[in-house]
Length: 350
Image (cartoon, rainbow, N blue to C red; front, side):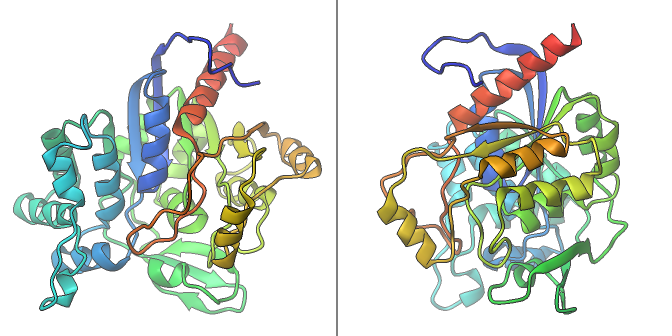
């Protein structure tokens, strides 16, 4: 049961929360949880090879800066201030196609890394410049690529290929450098955390990709923290076509191992905008509506299910740069659910 959001709740001021995932999903969870957790850390994916991020990676030989930039600007003290808006500003150039659409923040992170030789330090400096309200860490400072073996035996060599459309389902993920280490402060944050949240985000290219770095799964197996997965609200073309909620949960539990995942937040929408759903479906994006049987099967895995309508209400599809829109979670509802789990964990420990 989720607390009644019409009633005031007291913040769990002594709690440490770590959120692992891509830029948009991790930042939304942190924003929702901010009233209830005193110590907030976002651990962000670094294997993207999309257009603007891919150019910055090639230019400066760095891990992917795009998801980190998204997280930093979303968590700025004032996201509408000049500097956060400048980081997200995309250059326009008809004469230099490589820079057309380039996010300025990606160039800033590339330049700071070249100047100092420290990618994580570049992220920390940028966070200071914009007054970031949470600690933002790259999951790794290693410049490696996400790869995948498909069910038909083919191997995809980078993130752009892994999330490509009209291909066989993904059999397994791996990094081009399988020994690429997790950034040590990330392991320390997981060890100290009271709760670790995984997701939401692209299942393969954000969530699972982030967990592949050496040492992170071991840290999650050893932490005393509650480990929570926020399941996506929809399928994603090229990654989770035909997936159900339980398929998402099983992918995560297979990587983490038995008994590591404690709970999963699952959206089951009550008010459906059929016209909007039809627009998404036309793009291959389908709402996940778990059945009672699915929920029972997830519970049989030893994972607690917290089910409600977590979807953020919108008036229509949003236009995003070089990405598909989808049905997002409402940060406030996610924050309340995590707060309830934190209180339950306290009660179980007394």
